[in-house]
Length: 166
Image (cartoon, rainbow, N blue to C red; front, side, top):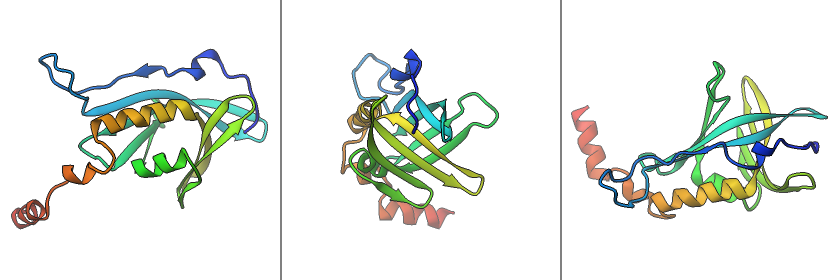
C-alpha cells in the first residue's frame, strides 16, 4: 500500500468494549471480545483511506471472528471467517478464495496485516496494525483457549436430539 502519514487515532484503537462476564464483580473472562480499529484501505494506486472496523469474537461461535466495516453507515458490511485463519495470517500467507491474509512490513506503518477480501460486489485490500490485531486475538484466547473450541459445540447426541425435535 502507498505510504501515507496516518492520523494519530489510527495508531490506537477507538474503543475496546469487552462484554459479558459475571455480574457479581468476579473477574471471569468476557463471553465476547470486541475492539474497533482503524484499517487503511487502498482506494487506488496512490490513495489510501481509513475504515473503522469492529473485530468481534464470541464464545457462542468459537471458531469464527467477525469484522464489521463502515460502522454506523448504511453500507455497513460483516465478514466472517475462522479464528485460525486470522491467527495463521499473522504469521504467513493464509486463506484462499474470498479471504486472504498475510503479514507485511511497511516503512510508514511498521508491522502490518494485509487483508484481501473479494466478493461478487467487488474487492478490497486493507491494512491493519499487526500488533493491535495480535493483541485482540490473544484476548480471544482468554475466552476460549486454542484447541478447546470443540468443547463448546453441541455433542453428536445433542445434535441428534435437536434434529429429531425439528
